[in-house]
Each structure stands twice: as structure tokens, then as C-alpha cells.
Image (cartoon, rainbow, N blue to C red):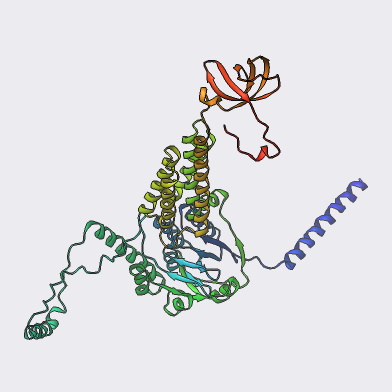
Length: 498
């Protein structure tokens, strides 16, 4: 009984001590952050479906968990419009403010990146960065250099050089008198052709989209329209002066300090940012998203297409190898995926295909390098123009691909020349001038060993077993031989006939 009371008192003491320690620890710990945390996301490279999936997922997750801020670091040349709209929809639907930050110094936010910046609750740039050039580029072809809105009105014929000066003065006075009346009248416009009408439709839709974003965030809509129509670009300081962005920040800490206390409009209403001492967590895309984004890089895309071309040509040249063909088909499929998510020039893709065909023709019907060289040049030029500005393949990558393809063609040419330089491989011509050793001999006839085969032979001079002989002629199944002369000390340096 006494032992039971002791155990009960001991347990009671432990409970009291635990409660005291818990209370002290609660007092010592700082107050809970209450959502005072944020995430950093990265848009580095083209705006592609894997990138859009990663950003939309993490923005939604931050909104659902009540994060204080989402910072999206941007360095992009642009990308697909559908992927861009997926990101923008996630930003507009977020209850957590999203701040876009063009970083690090030297980065850019062109084309689709500008739309994403305009949709953000807070838009910032680091010094020595730029943004703009938001003219839409169609997938499958480079944009037209002509603006479909220019020269839409029909122009009258110019007066001839021998026109009367009085007539010119009268026309000028008539134009001045009618200027006031025609100011309010719409100018007649010529109908656009089908390609120009399609391009005008795309540009007008893009202009309306970015103006709607600008009006929603209170940013410069007129400059945004010029960035779409005229592809203009500006620096970070110019963007701040033109009310394109809200902040120019040296780093993340500077951005957080300048954002603190800013009131923004999120999906659920207005919210005042409290970013002082906020804890940030950087979230990276998944492994599959990183791999797909890596494949969508223009440099990787052309490398994959080059490997596909080489592998398929080798498999066709040497059927049954299997491995080169399998690698070629795999690279071809991955390359098609990359071209699906990148804006490419149809002419460049055609040049790459023609160049590959020419190199394959060189492998099958040798022209001693002429068609192969032409194919190599077409292939290289196609690699250079296949993607528009902002997505250009780097010159070192093109040089490396051309060097590897040139080396392959050189090996093919060397093998062809070598196959034509040696003599016949079978028949009487194949054994003529070969050397052998006397196996048995009697008078002027006997047996010799040539290329591992035992032949009946005759000679105009007597020979002895072990003598070296050279085949002079073949008569039926009898070799005509003569004794081979010693080549001397430099025999190893002298060329031998095959």
C-alpha cells in the first residue's frame, strides 16, 4: 500500500514538472509566424508546359497554405502563349501576393515574361536588366517583318515629274481646305490578306490581353501596347519611370524591405504585405519537370536532332546495328517534343532536313565530299536560323555539331577511298603479286603456300622449300611464281601491293 502511494506521488510530480517545463518552453519560444513565410520560385529559360505546371502548382499551394508572399525570379526570352496564360491564371486566382523579380543582373524578361510581370501583384527588376519585346511569334514560323497595320490605306499615284506647278498648288490648297472636314471621318482601309489578317488578329488579341492586365494592376497600358506592336524594350530604370514596374531592388532582401507595407489586390480582396523578417523557402521543380525543361532548351533540341540524324544514317548505312538506330529514334522523338514547345522557323527546319538528306546521299552514293559538304553547310545554316531571336542556338554548339558531322563524313570518305584503292579481293586478280613460301619443290614445279592456301606452282628457275616467292600469273589452277627478292633493311617502310 505504501509503495503504491509512493508511485502515485512520483507520477504526479512528473506530470507537474512536465507541465511547468511545457509552460516555460511556450513562454520562451517566439510567437507563431501566423503565415509569415514565403516561397521563391524560378523561371529560368523558356516558358514551356513543364515550367507552367511547376509554377501554377506552387503558386496554388502557397495560396492554399496562406503564405505571406511568393517571389518569382525571372530570366526568360519568352515562350508559349498557352503556358504563359496558365501561369497568369494561377497568379490572378491566388490569395497570396505574387511578386515577379527579374534577376540576377543581366537577366531579361522578354515576350511572355512581360505579360507575367504585368499580371503580378508586385513587379520588380534588378539593376542592369531589361524587359519588353512582347510581339507574339507563331510556332512553326518566324514573325513577319512587316506590320499588317502599316500601309493599310490605299495610296494615290504620285504626280508625274512634268506636272504643272499650278496644279500642284491647287491640290495643296484643296487638301488644306478639306483637312478639317476629313479629320473626323474614318480613313478607308484596304482589306488585309489572309496571313496579314491572321497576324493582325493575334496582335490585337495580345494587345487587349496585356492592356487588361495593366488596367487590373494600375500599370502603363500604352507602353505595354507598344511593346506588343513594335517590340520595344526598356531597362529597369526606364521601366520604373514609365510605371511598368513598381520596384528596382538590388537583391531579395532589398525587395522584401521595399515591399513591406504595400497594399495589393488579391483574389479575395485587398491585402497589406508584411514582409519584414519573413522566412523564405526556395522550391525547385520536380525531376521530371527539370528534365523536360532541359530538353526544351534550343541548344539541347538541335543536339538531339543532330544525334537523331547521325544515328539513323549509321543504321541505314550498316543495317542490323540496332543501337545507332534506337538512339536516333529516341533522340528524334525528344527533339520533336522540344520543337513542339519552342517557336521555330519552318525554313530553318527545312534546311536542316535537306542537309541531313545530302549527308545521307554522300554516304550511299559517294561524290568525294561535294554533296556532303553542301549538306553540312545547309545543316549548319539551318541550325542558326531555325529559332528566332531570343532562342538562337549558341555558335559554339553549332560549331561542335558541324565538327562532329564533318568528322563522320570524313570517315565515310576515307572508308570509300580505301575500299577503292586496294585490288580485287577474290579471283585471279586478287592473288596476282601476292607473296608466298615454297612448301615442296621438284625441278621447276612444286607446291607453295599463298595467303594460307596450298597451290600447285611452277617456275622457270629451280627453288627450294622455304624460299619466298611472288605470284606472277595464274594459269588455271597453277600459279606461275618467281623467287622474291629481299627487300633489305628498309622493307618495312616500302609500300606493298595488295
